Image (cartoon, rainbow, N blue to C red; front, top):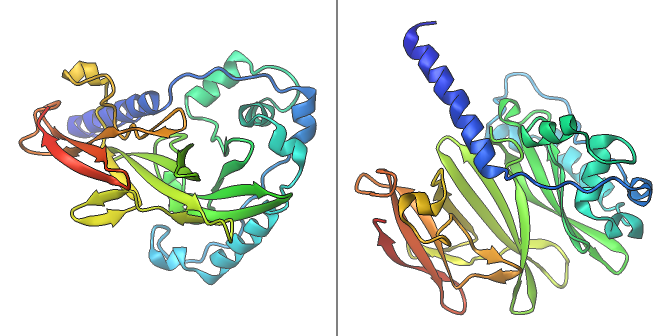
Length: 298
């Protein structure tokens, strides 16, 4: 390996490490209690045979009949997660039980395993809605290919919607979920992150009151078109490091269950003065959706 390739490899490792640290702030893990362990239930796995000669990142793979049938079977299994004890248990406590494998607190080694991205978190959410992220055995296997499902609990039943299909990222534990009130409806934010380029991509849904299924919610006016998705390049640091307001973090759209009146996104620009590469776009809520009000150079 020549010097250039060695430098490129070292840079790539440093980039992944920096993005993982940036995307995954240290967290305090609750103990796995006896009650939570009793409520714990292993999540099902997506299983089907990977065909030869089909690229793992292709639409052909995503639309493979055997894969679609396996997803329908998986959704049926997820609808069986109706136990009140499971829904009453704290999500982080359930994750602690899976990581630790029994009652007790996570060891320093287990905490490091999570912080370093060596353990893939699969469960997120609250006591009414939960996001389940499950590996896909045949899709983007070198990029941790996975699928995400929103579970909605209502009147003793669980309704399942697929919200990410064939998601892939080299950033460990790059998926998250948050919720906000939108005119009496629960707005669901599914956040994702990637490394090439370092970026964030959020997706927004509401739950249809008749079907209890997640449907995309078009919240953003982008290039004169409405979209339920919003993208931003990463700052790779705190806003203050670039002379920006402290609330100018990327896609800071939901805070404490409420939509923010404004938020910032960033895009690559040859004229961008933020980190000599980015321009800032400020979006403002107009009462119905977000519209860009300007492109600021810093």
